[in-house]
Length: 181
Image (cartoon, rainbow, N blue to C red; front, side):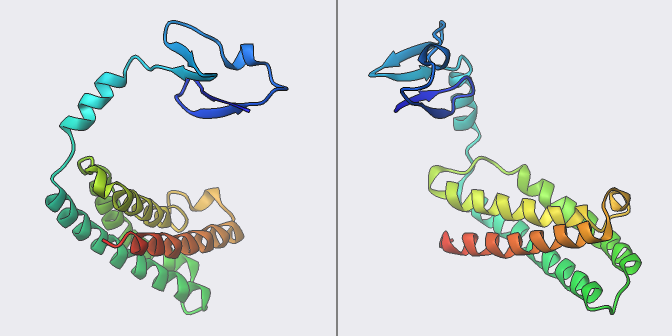
């Protein structure tokens, strides 16, 4: 089994039955060392410099991220509460959509703030990624009971998608908890 990096810089395996000439194509950016194919990206140095110049201060990043996530989690719990009222029959879908109209702008606001944070230092990378995952999942709540997207899904599909997203929300919360920050 041979390991290679494809044009996107990803790794893969070429076994003895695959066409190695296809997978190991060489150009000016490629080299093979010990049967491992490397594709050197011309933009690597620029990306490295950009990353180094945009790493945020650890303490400041923790503080602002915690604030954003606190708001997003509060909003997510509100959405889940509204959704549960709908599932329990104490709220109509129309009322749920109307209630969501009041929550969606705040979710959007904090979600976009989270996506615009500085690059985390390496010791915060896992925690920061968990925060980003949770933030994106919470933002997904805005996609199902929103006037803008209501006509693109059936009632059963909206319920299925929302249930999956609620489950993913709790999984993302657990993953964040496991980071220890």
